[in-house]
Length: 224
Image (cartoon, rainbow, N blue to C red; front, top):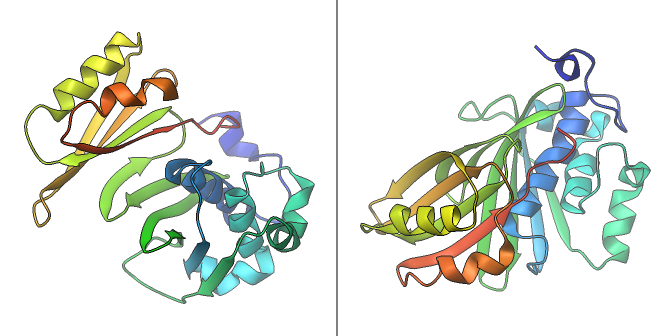
């Protein structure tokens, strides 16, 4: 166990799980969606302990602050609602109560852009640490500790080989690759955990494979 896990993070708020963890869930969800990608509305659903005691711990403020890309020690967290309004960001927060299908401190964050939506499920696992366990219906296991490349594609042969070659040509090692398939729509989601950030200007090389629909490069959470 590291010293960070013993003493927890330097943060704004009363609880590392309900506040610091919530900030990081929101921040990482925004990175997965795309910081520069527009949205009309962000909807935040809180479940279980997040829902039951979220108001008292400022979990709703914390999640929104993360979506605004604030760090856990940013004093603007306390004014996140007002800042979101000033920035023209529309948000909706729902306290959903108990759902035994989800972990104790769970949030679902959904970004709406026109008729499309993109959602992420994440949980706070203690000491300000987080776990993203679902992206758009695909099971994932992301903790924010690695730079990540997420690839959505048709479920056909050659996707992993093509993406791996581009990553290696960029001089980056692959720490781990995970693939989830949805046979009902013939799609797959591949998560490549990397030893360095994948350059955004190399995304077009990934998309040269016409079976790949989307490629998202996600920076690690630098404060971990």
